[in-house]
Image (cartoon, rainbow, N blue to C red; front, side, top):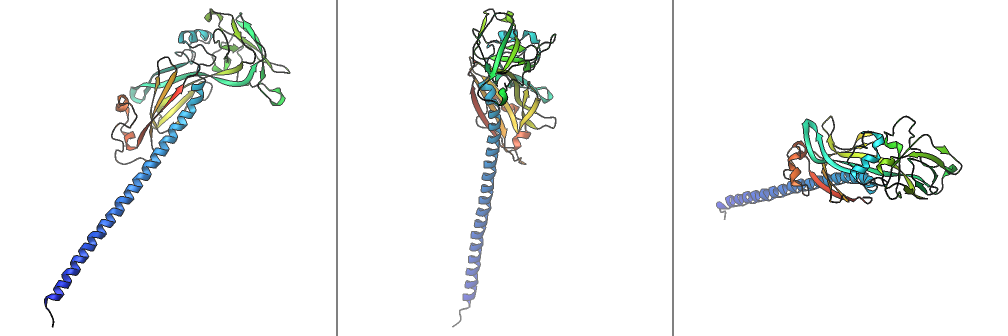
Amino acid sequence: MIFPGRNRSSRSFILLESLASLSVLSMIVTGVVVGAIAIMETGNYVADVAAAQDRADQIFSLLKMPADLCGYGLPKSAPLYRQAFAQAGIKEPFNWDGVISVMDNKIINNVFRKNGVCRIVYGIPTGACLMRSSVISDDQVRISAKVIGKSEGGKVMLDRLDPVKSPDRPRSVKNWLLFGSALPQACPMWLSGDMEVSFIGKKLNLVWNKTAFPDAPINIHKHDNLFYMGAIEFGADKTSKGEDIFYINNLRGGGRQPRELGIIDARFELHPGRKILRVLLLVRGDRRYEEIKTKDVPAGWPAEYASDIPNEARHYRLFAFAESFELKNL
């Protein structure tokens, strides 16, 4: 017997089954697409974090040595620092506010950033040491130096020290030599005339500003390591093309140079007693997004600086990093 409604029922069932299958398939496709987008977004986030972390690490590594040797062989107070370098005039870094200072900086369109620049004056090892102790009471002193450890031909590493010929003044950072063991006060000295080469080392004629040190004489000690003087200024800024960079102005040579791209902002904090320098960086990832990607204040970035974040920078993922440096010689 043939039941007339049976075909219609079968067709209806097949239709419902097809609709159900399409619904399930749609859910699967949607899930796959959402999952793919989530995986891609996670991948982008991981890449942005890695790029930003790498940028921050580069900056922190550049600052470690100057921070470690900040103030080595130099007067610690700002007034005495400037008096010691009175013969150099008012040229940078001799007119700075001591061996470490933090100040506001001006970027494009006369915009100022609070605590946006840091300046450090520090010591750089020469590879040479004093051959004998000396008590310095006159404004000139003659010392002998030799290389530390073994070297080919007895070479003394003082090749980056520039002499000052009379009647010139010691206006270059490269004119000055530092002694870490000087007592009762650290006393920078500048090289007067060329060094004399001897069989066992070099002899140097040095001059210092005796009037700045009422506690003279100054004692310097045998085997004390000799240090060059170094001075840098650094912070975040923009290039002429509008790129966000971290720059370092090296006063020993090279001038102001961009050292790392993608540094949106940098701030510096000197703790009471000037024993700790805290460096805060606002760093972007590599990928620029069409939409605003960083809407709020990035975690770890001070709210007081949030209004200085450029709108263009918010099209990137932004991350805050901080590092504290102990100023061991202050």
